[in-house]
Amino acid sequence: MQRLDKLIASQGTRSRSETVRLIRSGQVTVNGAVCRDPSAKYDADTCVVTVAGQPLCYQKYVYIMMNKPAGILCVSRDPKVPTVVDLLPEEMKRKNLFPAGRLDKDTVGLVLLTDDGDLAHRLLAPKREIVKRYQVRLDAPLSDEHCRAFAEGILLADGTRCRPAELLILENGEQPLAEVRITEGRYHQIKRMFGVLDRGVVWLKRLSIGKLVLDPSLSEGESRFLTDKERGSLE
Ligand code: URA
Image 1: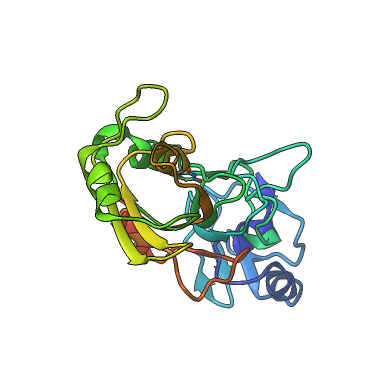
Image 2: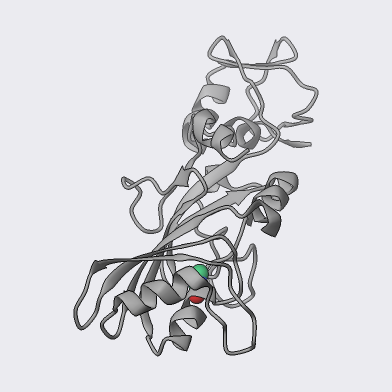
């Protein structure tokens, strides 16, 4: 059971305040009768809702992309540090949202938030080898040797052999900018890969997960629901 205003606003097409206004002005019906109480509770799976004369197609799960800023933890809840879920606007929040795949606290960029555990499980399954693209700034120049090392599969300090990955140098110099493509998601993976090559990561941003690309119009800290096309591209 959930509040009518939240049930409607959670679908992502209207803000909570606009939803409350529509409900109070008699433009929302539930099971055929007008409901003017935004706090009335209904079972979203069974009730039939119309908003301004249009049926509401309730979606069981939500899929949100966020441009994560630095300083935010990529978990659902934390007693001390703000999390990606805390950062969502009220109308996007749902009870069981979690980030599908983690970024470090100081990493920025694409995070997918959902309450669809099966999809997250499929996305993160190592055998699917979904490509994650990152932009990275380093603390010392790069060379073709580094690109070759990535392509061969870097041996981490703890003896783990990484899968072959791509390193593309975008701008070389004292603090080079590069793009990295990896198909795994080990703890601090990119920082550890560069650590083996004696390079420190000074800035790291995730650009894409498979076919899902960070919307360049989202500023750091902003989120939006995925389009149907983006949602489909995750399968
Ligand atoms: N690799 C890292 O080292 N950190 C991240 O946040 C993501 C990939």
